[in-house]
Every structure is written in C-alpha cells, then in structure tokens.
Image (tube, rainbow, N blue to C red):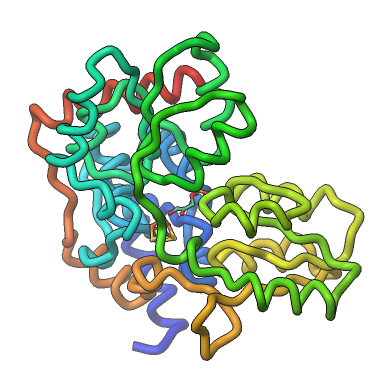
Length: 309
Ligand code: 13P
Ligand code: SF4
C-alpha cells in the first residue's frame, strides 16, 4: 500500500474502531503527523487518563504502552511493534532493583517512568523528566530518597534540588552517546546557536548546555526563545515538531560519538512505522496485557505522580 492509502486506511480504522493514536515526540515525522495526540512521557500518561476511546495505540516504546494500560486496564492498548523496548528500562531489572531497595528499607523510592511495570510496583512515586524536580522538591529536605534508573537524570535532579538521592546505575544508550568533541566543533562553527539538552545526557554535555529540559520543555524553549539557531542534544525525532513550530529557526542535531550519520536516533522508537501502525489497528495486535495484581501495585505510584505534577 502506498503512503497516501496507508494514511487514509489508518484514519478510517481509527474512526471505525473508536481508537486514538498517541505518539511520543521521538516517533518518525509520518507517525507524529497522523497521531491524534503528540507528547512527552508525562503528557502521554496524562492523556491516557482522559481519553474516551476504546482502543489506545501508543506509538512509542513498550513502557509507554504499559503506562497507558496500567492507567486503563479496561481498554485495549496496542503498540505497533512489540520489540520497541528501552535500554534505560532494561538497565534496571526488577529482581536486582528489589534487592537494592530492600537494602534501604527506610528510603522512599522514586522511579523514572522509563521502567517496567514490575519496577513501578516497587516504587513509591513515578516521575518523568518534566516533573522530576517538582516532585522531588515536595519531599522534606532531609528525606531519604532512592532514584532510579537513570544516573544522569538522577545526578542532575540532585544538583538542582540540593538532594543526595541514592542513584541506580542505569542509562539510556541514545542520550549517553553524544560526542563532546563534535559538540564543541559544532559550537565553534555556530557560535550564535544555543545548546539545548535532555537531562538524560552525560554531565559534561549538560555543563555545556544553555538550557536543560525534558522533550516538552526543550520544544517550548525553542518556541519562546528569540534565538534563531539551536544545537539539539536529544533524540532527533523532536526536530520534526521544533521545525514545524519554528519554520524560520534552524535546528542542528548533536551527533553521537560513533556516527556515520549526523543525527541521534533511538533504534527502539524507530521500529514503529506507518505500515506497522496500520497492521496493528487492523489486527488489534500487538496488545499490551498486564497481570491484574501487578497493575494494581504499579498504578499507585503513577497516580501519585499525576497528583503531584
Ligand atoms: P521525556 O519524554 O520525558 O522527555 O523522556 C525522554 C525519553 O527518553 C523517552 O524515552
Ligand atoms: Fe529509552 Fe533512550 Fe529510547 Fe528514550 S531514547 S526510549 S530512554 S532508549
């Protein structure tokens, strides 16, 4: 089927099945353009609580589909490619995380949303990169806190909140690999550009950044800034919306260390295609299913996050 037919078929199936398509900003432009809702991790979770649709198709990675399903156990939640995982979520196996948190029984456990349902079930409150500071700030200054799994985001939140949360040693393979050397060279070539970075990046990249924020915060920053050029240190899918919202501004993706191409793409996010989205709506598969007991435990820290956001 050609692209135009795929788009019409997806739109037809959405209507026929009362389905909503939600997409993360790291999806390919084609998928962002056909989505009913585009957002960062927090916005996707918030939107999942509001939809009246019978079917949610989450165009993102597996943990995002799980979050939507945990919040909507009675709805059908689909993802276009079941293999769309997340290296950060994988860097925190539930069994090992459980041993870690059990070593500190009097600590409150804060987990980034980029985790499996089993890790969320071990968590007191979930956060995203958009609300992590706001939520950590709501705990007393002397609170004993564990933060997992992203060591870079955890370290950044420690620095902006003055806390010393215990950090799980996990990371995202995309955000960890931005090349300092190439960033310095790009800044020399474009001295008028601002460097904007996601807090999942390593500290040396964050130290060079003019602005640090979640995917949504970075997008808002480019809209509100009077600067015309940005060096973007996050997954390059966000450039699609940055360019759409700022047609007269220039966005240059910061490349990874070992790149042959110029940009930085999450191979998991890019598994989703228009064709897979069509097939998934047509066949109502792959579907995210979560054991009821696990859902009941995992929903609590997510609802607490939505309350504290
Ligand atoms: P946000 O959507 O919270 O910016 O997170 C980025 C990310 O890596 C999602 O996988
Ligand atoms: Fe996970 Fe990193 Fe991909 Fe986000 S960009 S989905 S954190 S691997």
